[in-house]
Length: 482
Image (tube, rainbow, N blue to C red):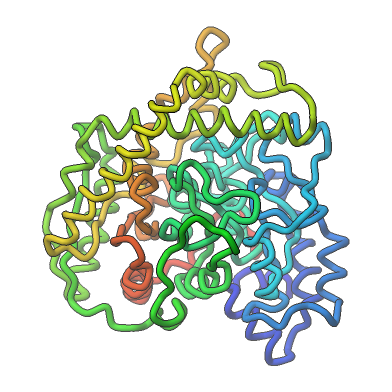
């Protein structure tokens, strides 16, 4: 029966519990068995809380939320649960067995929804890479092709969901870290609007508002219901997204009407775009046209501005420098070059080279950049369609630096973030959908981007595409049901 559970989405599993056909304990036991069987090959789960999960599942105090009893995994970055390991992909925190003392607002919402966390998933150090190969825990492998990367920084979560460990898992996105792993692993990956999901109480924002909390999952209805469950404001948040007019779950199956959608099949600034990625976007465009939408080749001019790259680097590198200081302060132990991976240390040093006014100028650029982007939508477009990435999922090791140049691999990340990171700067919601597979069997995603606050439109259209071309029943070679 455990293999049958692995093919059910979170909504279906919750329905079984609600009807009394399955107990939460059965779902959790089955998910644990899947992890124990498959994870030695994939390396997706880095810390386990199986005993606590079993106790939660058997407890009469398990919250009666919309996803009561459904097994879940949390990324090893943020979304803390009190007492659980929290290493952020860092060997330094792993060595000190760091644990947070309080629930994060996001973690509390996970509990309130009735979800049961089984543990933490692998992530690159401080979520910095577009692959998941931290020195602390080693690489996570892509279930579609185990020699390849599942993406980053939510690669452990994406691999776990794609392989059927759980129906959905926590993910976060500061430059594409929900959408890139969804692209690589054949999943639905929605990056919510800035401020939709709180980082409280520890933080008001992460990476100057570039980062968002969310999930990766296999179906659009899971994405919608999970967003309803995890979204919300924590007391004292510096800002928040406007609440939806109705639950996001009610958008699934709702008529989106006839939309005007811009198509951008190739990367900005004359960057190379792999033919498979172009084909994915063009295929999605044809599906949208078949549903009655108007497609035209167009995109915001702001996407061509090379100054956006410098602003992004200024904010992210400064934030990494601050993150290292914060880790040092938590443990009361000075951090040295030897305590972190070479690219992390070097990026932090770049961040320390910027002045306070440099940082403020970069934030101001991002705000102006968002206004420029919004003007394109105000001129009559409802959505923008792009490939999720400009290159197919790479082999593990593709981003490896050298002793002489530890940052050499970072430049290879650009094709994977060129379509995603601009919308972290603007705070817009974007969703990656698995509508195309390459000739060698790897998933290639397409991204839809809406104006700020319009996850409702994304979910209506995503559900429409899912109905035209179902994708959740397509499973990789490494999967719990096999």
